[in-house]
Image (cartoon, rainbow, N blue to C red; front, side, top):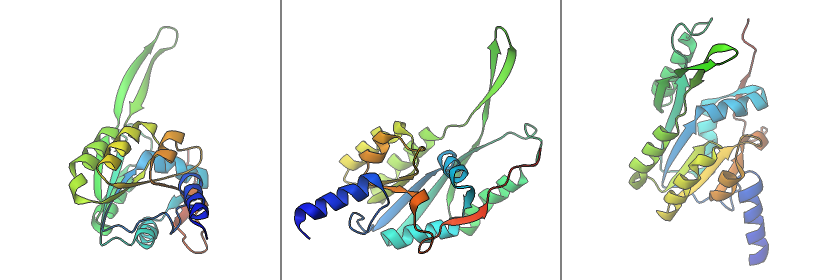
Length: 213
């Protein structure tokens, strides 16, 4: 295959689909930053939950890192704001920390009262973790040579460009309709997790089910 054909193939893989072995540089130390809100949108599109042990196995297979560290970021509802128990969510956080050795950054959703002239008051919940992700990515940047961001938020483009200028290899994992064009094309590689071949690299667990009303 000519050099030109190789370059075209690499570009197509990088910008338009899954990572291939051609455009993945095996990592010495790999840090993974998972924005759970983006992953929730991906899971809803698939209709299944991620199987996190399988997801970690897939990443290890693809990047073959000597060392891997995974951060998981989530905002959760305050007690008493839901009609269902939140025990399962907190047990899941414990599983990630103790079972898979993730570093879990979590915070309670901020509830903001909004007054409407004609409709009275409503409550908006806000739980962005962009700042926490950015702080960790910058704080630990001397510890890794490659990073994966599970996010589709274009606000991370400045962070990705900064890390690339620091000679880091950066990859974005998300899915169609959940990733910005700027982020998809700004990284060294992009993976649409919805198109991963399940016959060879299954990363999915049980089906999503509607919560009883």
